[in-house]
Length: 395
Image (cartoon, rainbow, N blue to C red):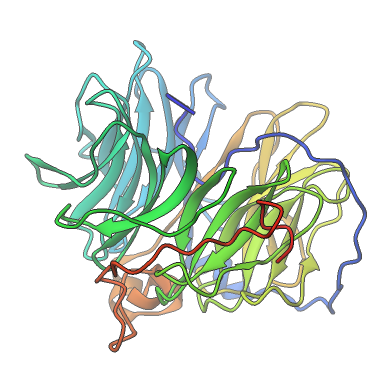
């Protein structure tokens, strides 16, 4: 992998051979009209030339440009308290730093300010710290810093690359190539414990994301030349392949209540949005469009999703919404420019009230299992999920 572009949700490693599979179709239920009035989203767009970060209401109104930096500003991540935005900004010299700003675009500052590449920020539950990946010591490793600075904690180290951190309670999940192939690992966020390897797969396991209650990890696994979505417990147990198809399934997004996982799949020849239960049941196709529908993200109240639709004529992506059953599509932006990398912004009042996905549970930052808190990585045995053939296709 080496040095790569700053990616949020997934890498499209290639289009697998398309195979038409049967999908369950459900009755369309209208999305909550309150969702569009209640929430705002941040996203990146190159409508002015360079990519910049914008703020917009969920119904497409109130478009506001937040950044005016030279270079490329992408991948905004809103803090859980709804007060700040972290973003990746590629400078003219080709390096990327993490910038912080208030949600109205004021107070913009270069938070990492380092000649290396600093990528993929994720917030702590209390919005005071950020975990990210950086190659400042020659390899990509995980670092944690306080938003007020200065000083960083190097969480991982060594001769391998550690990438794509995902934070829950005081545990960080990440992908590492320490073992040759890319595997999923976890470690404490203060670097006080050695990382624990969770997967053992002759392929690529990347992009781990915690479930809202912290009891599961979902990740992308390259199996037999294509990508599936897999879940497991934080100790590597109860592993299962959710999608298990000859196509590629990527870019997972947990619903706020943890009952659904939305993702993108090319199983019918082009990319469409699907959803599935965490146990692998009720696989449902939500979009049926000749263009590519990618990168789904759930509304904070779980009533619908926002996604990108890539135009075949222009090659650009526009932002769309739909309800949770795949109906009532609504276009937010046109495709005269590229628009994508959505993050949700919530007002302080919503954060305090605990409504929607702004509560600690829905934001994925609170430990709920008192008997087995994920904040204490075990030193138990790593789980080998391979079948007799050396891959996991037999499971």
